[in-house]
Image (cartoon, rainbow, N blue to C red; front, side, top):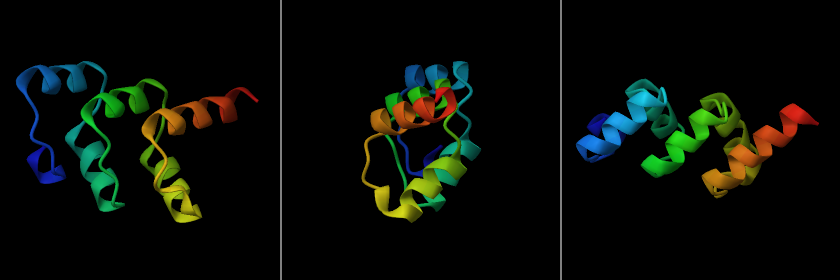
Length: 80
């Protein structure tokens, strides 16, 4: 996880693991220049936001959006 630029506590690592946030997911985000906070990573995974989706937003000029807006946008896209 340090490879992805994160210095996490053991409780954060456990929470990420419980929600399926892998170090590969985190490294992939870093590769695209994205480094959401640990709590945002959990929210992104819970709502099914993929690295490709986030990359697409960044490539479209929306790289500065907060993670909370990203997962809401993705959720709205799926439902509507």
